[in-house]
Length: 253
Image (cartoon, rainbow, N blue to C red; front, side):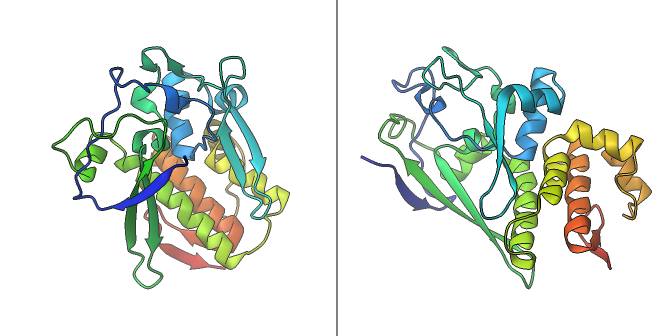
C-alpha cells in the first residue's frame, strides 16, 4: 500500500489524533526525507541553544538542487537507530514546541498559489493517509481548520510562503541552475542566520543595498525580521530590485 492524498477544506471534519496512546506513536519520526525551512532552523537552533552554524553542522545535510541550484537542507537522521529523528524519544518529540512546520502539519499537506495580478495567496489542503498511521478515526468533533489551529503553524506558513515566493520569482525570472556564488549567498541569508547577522552588522555585505534604518534595527533584534531582510537582500542580489520590510518594491536598478 502507498500513501493517499485526499483533498480537504478547512471546514471538513478531521477524525485524527497523534498521542502516546496511538499504536504507531513515533513511527512517523523515522526514515524520512525531512526538509528544513529557514524558519524551522531558527526555532530549532534556539530551542537547543546553538548557533545556526553549529546546528547546521551537527544536525543537517545540505546539497544543491540539480535543476535550480538552490541549497536544500535536510535533517540528519541517526543511522544507528533505524534512521530515527535525532529529537525523537520514547515519550515523543524533545523539541516539540519548536518542531518543524512539516511535523506540525502532518498528516495535512498544504500547497499555495499566488495571483500575479493581486498577490493574493490561495491555500489548498489534503490529508496524507499512510498505511503505517493509526491516528485516523480516533478523535471526533474537530475540523481540519481547528486541528491546524491547535498546531500553531500560522507563523511557520507565513515565513515559508515568503521563501517560496522568492524561489518562484527566481524560477520565472532566472530559469536554470543558480551559479554557486549566488547559491552560497542564498544559504547564508536563509539558513546560517547567525553568520548572516555578523556579516550584516560587522561587514559590508549590504553594500549598495538601501535598507531603511528602522528595518535594520528590527532585524538586529528579531530573527524573523532578520530572515525578511535576508530575503529582501537576495531579491536585490538576484534581480536588482529593492524591497522594503513589507515586501514592496522600492527601486529597480
